[in-house]
Amino acid sequence: MIALKKEFDRMADRLTHDLRHRGLIQKALGGYYLKRDENKARFNDWAAARQAAAERKWEAVNHLDRHLDQFARAVEARGGTVFWAPDATAARDYILNLARDRGVRSIIKSKTMTSEEIHLNDALAKAGFQVTESDLGEFIVQLRGEAPYHFVFPAMHLTRDEISDLFQRELGTAPTDSPEELTMIARRFMRKLYAAADMGISGANFGIAETGMISITENEGNARLTTALPRIHVALMGIEKVLPKLSDLALFLPMLATAGAGQAMTAYNTLYAGPARPDETDGPREFHLVLLDNGRTRLLADAEQRDALHCIRCGACLNVCPIFKNVGGHTYGSTYQGPIGSVITPHLAGLQPWKHLSFASSLCGACTEACPVNIDIHHHLLQNRRNAVAGKPAWWEKILFLGFAFTMRRPALYNLSGRLARALQPLHRLINNTPLDPLRPWTRSRELPSPPQKSFTQLWTQRHRGPQ
Image 1 (cartoon, helix red, strand yellow):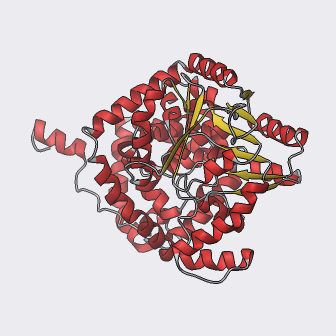
Image 2 (spheres, one colour):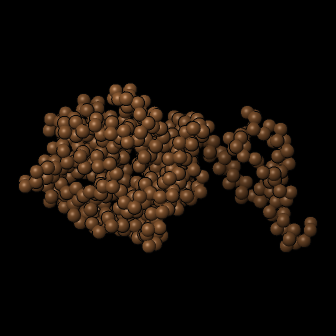
Image 3 (cartoon, one colour):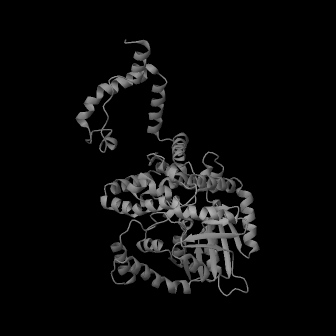
């Protein structure tokens, strides 16, 4: 618990002083804002679309039992196998046992944050399976031994030269600074892996209860190859990804593309409907859908924060968050970064070990404003803070809050503390921004404002009762 916070503080302190890193992130997101706003304008009414999306997700999540049952039955009717995974261990074990039972040797994987959540790659590698990420960004960070930096842009923190050096070192290719050539290097390397893989693992952007299909949206086409060429397709999906009707995609696909990547639509939007039929020449022979809970039903039971399950993993809140843009994605130390990650990680992985994420926020509200499904993100961060303090505060937090409560309930003591603060501030200037300054974490980057000559209470009394 303490180690997680210390590591967060250490990395945040280092990266906020790394102007090169901050410049890379700002540059990477610069074009996104322009294209996002351009494509938001294509909607007749973006605000109304957000509200409609929020209402459809509300229907899906608040009747999740019904929609999940319909979805699972429809998948099975199409020849698929459904496994209900209560936690990460059950999901990993199911996929590992399936791979062993079917004699799988190599596995190709398309982009899925849910697999990162359950640490699937590590489990498969330790069991002796060769696992390769087919998404370009995921493939790059896999070669570096890193977790994805961002939901949508896993390698946004790297330059072309760094990627070229990586490919030269790991794949033996010639150096290049051409994005097209770097992409082709990865594609040439990947082609033989698609053909050789026995199992393809994907995520799912949405699951359609009405039809028993999963929807995957992408820009590279790697998910199509990952799911079509191997004889076994395993889809890993969080239970909250269900939508009631196929027609819902008419709203969610363009909203996901616009909010997530600043596109009108992503390049490839595909519906997967189970294994290949007997008369079909391509497609997997087996389709397995792993429906993952892993703490989601606990969040579902929380009426106050349940709408965090509406998240469609677009990454829009990360793109606008001033904290994320300064500390970077890896600093969070969790699968889901940024504002929405700071909301849901304490629910999925435990409030006390991860409570520091909810405190790492300016509460500016930019995340809530950017969210395409109207999740009340910044208020949920505040609610997590409240719950963390109420649940198991540190001893020094108890003392601080008891002292605060004691003072606020006694007007005379409150007024005295204000007078003392005004009297002592000139002394603070002598140690301002030195190691002796108890306020240094705040004052080293800000000026401590001068105290007013009179408190609000004194001004109010003077106005309504006359000079004293």
